[in-house]
Image 1 (tube, rainbow, N blue to C red):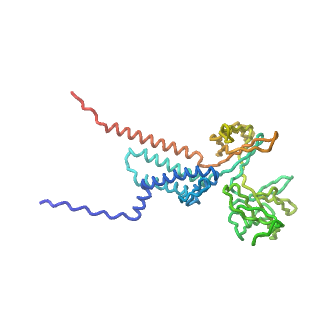
Image 2 (cartoon, one colour; image 1 turned 120 degrees about the vertical axis):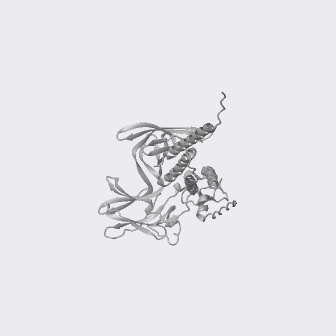
Image 3 (cartoon, one colour; image 1 turned 90 degrees about the vertical axis):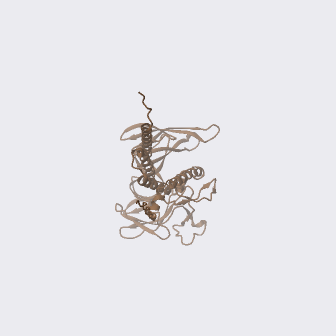
Length: 407
């Protein structure tokens, strides 16, 4: 007599970790993240018209922006959205877990896995560029040359000794030593190559130097030589901020000089005498030197008919390095890439008025270690899709029923 088969033992309920892994690697989360990323990109494209490119990028895709509130046409859109950086980070995690946990070990899905890796590579490239790239601008008038770019945001203090009426042996105090000096905080920056150190305090990211005669100073604000620093609200475009701080010289004997004000709007640096030598102290945006110089030979611009909206502007330049010259053209959507640097045609200016006016190009200079990674990632994705197509085609041909043979 046969006994009926025993019922299968019930499966234990999935653990919390299993459910969490299933959610993080699921297709539903990937779909939601892709929709959010498309929405963020669309809103950022619209908002940058009024707010500017760099402000919008920081608002939508900076790693410090956990969430954001869109603004269109100067009006707030009551739609809280997650920051684009973290949407991309979660998408990279989703694709990685999905590839590892859900990949069926058969040769027909190899192409899909390769395409997944290509998309992850693209997201990693964006993160590397965000954290490790440097961006600045270089303004060059026609006929002039430059070998230095100015950072968009970082403010530094430059201390230089004056020799033969020129600054020499410039010491640079980086912006990271300034930005946290709020309220009563101060910092002594040691400069071993100079006969003194510099003490910095009262840093304001956007400030105006006011004369005491124009009104009473705010409470708790130091008045120096009849002037004080008036804090202002941060500009929408962070490039337009005018930082300022208080500084003093600290000699090797420990004696402090009288404090003085440093402002990025100052036309001349502050002069200091020490041990019979003359030094200058200046607050300005950080400069970074190029391994070559760029001379603007000719600038041309074309505009849409009946408007002043540029349709195209082109810079013919000469790149000089170690006594050798090379011609190049930089124009909209066609940058110059050389020595791990990329020069984009960002904008232009007219310097002066009348017959002596000269046109000048403004180049955005980017040093990005992941500059070519997006291009390489597209190659990987394309190769993966091609492999997937070929494997599917081969499987279809192999499984297709063959016609019966007749004698």
